[in-house]
Image (cartoon, rainbow, N blue to C red; front, side, top):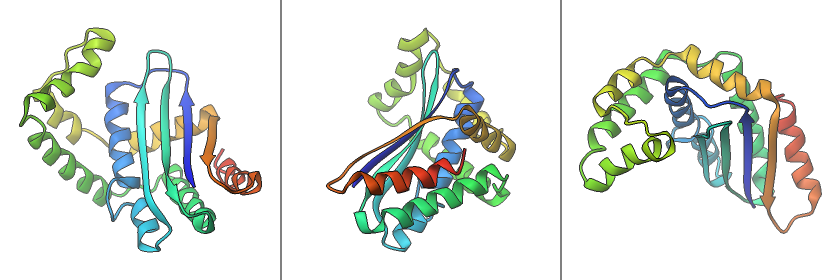
Length: 187
């Protein structure tokens, strides 16, 4: 089964909120030792899982998706719900945050090695709203992220209660309904 779960809030996230959500996404699904993806891989429940935040002029989305065997889908969604409940309850440790900051600073340092990388850094915001990002300011924005920013921004997505779950599978609708019900308990 390939699934996608998307939550929306009816506003554009600030640059600080985007940086915080990037950190949270890394903690949740960014590595083989992440809270959701790492836990699922360790138990052999899923092939791949991602989370990502996207920003528009009028709304912002927090998306989760991946591929999972039908037989293990419910266990995977139990992990997703468990870990997001922890985040909503305020469970982001300084160790989690320091680890993601170290990773993000390393990616930043490697992020300007090619013309394509440099272009990709500037192009999104420039073509969207004529804003030229300050490459030299990125380390300070990474280091400024706090656990409270991650938690509060995540809570705002759940508070808006605007979301959908979709899947491509050969299974009947009953499985998707069970997965939906698991996620619905977060709202």
